[in-house]
Image (cartoon, rainbow, N blue to C red; front, top):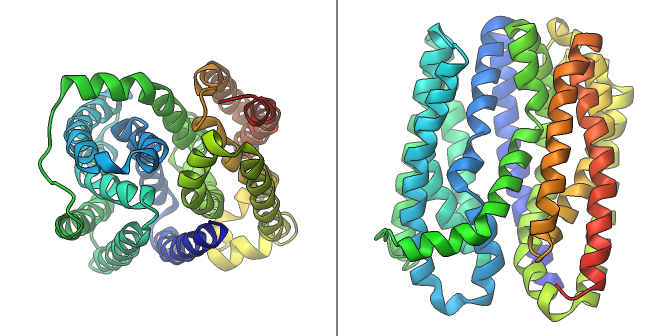
Length: 410
């Protein structure tokens, strides 16, 4: 079991490192090639739409990782029903995103970019659903291949758009086209895996999934939005320039969490089974993996704290040095974020998730409020500080629930 976790974890981490390296290099290229204001538009729209990806998922990935390993004999029924639900969610999320963008009063390139980029939900849901089913079966290569292919193709097409002198809008067009091509490849792969691409819209299934997924959905939506809260509030209150400055270093944090994300994905099926079969073994594995990811986080922490100026100059150039105070604070956020990611995996697989959700909502509201208030006093460093306070509070909250889950029957 440990060997399988280690193997899948290694593959997922390696693919995430490669994919994120490609994406990060592309992000740096854009930061250097665009004006700070246009880069701010790009970073803001990207972050805004990404916040709605969990809405289009509605916690279904977590539902699959928890339930499918326990009921592999029902795979085809699960896939057909969830495919129908995913299609419906993609359409609903598209409308919701556009409505909120109009409510915020977006205009010009920002609004056009949002309209185009909001079309990603359907192809993304198809890719995500197929990969989630394979991950639940502990076969991770489908998701890995899709991630690497899309990262490479999207970056190449975006670079081409910049060299042709096309505007910010075209960066989102190239992203969408690359995602559509990747989705077509995944559909071909799904047929070979005998996953039935025949969506079924079942009221009974929707009711059953919603009964459990509503808690996952709330947690995943907040979790995805969480790291981008300061970027959104800074963009709305301080303007595109400061959104570009903060967005440049917040990308380091988003890239950094690829390790706990990959590890959490690799251990999710095992955690789900052990939670009902062997809590002593679960506790042992959880502590071992937690220690490992925290140790890994110490290197980027040292870079953020002691080599930030050199790093920003090297990566982005002198225009982005005003982000240095925020980068140092985000460095302190990183180890806490690593540890809290794994704790969330156990909480979301347990029956305590219902009791945990109201606490998580309160935590999210607090951080959102801090992200509005603190930048007004300390600029973008205040935005980063809101995440630091949030992670410290979440550490105590998570450990309180973990101790109860691993001691009592789930």
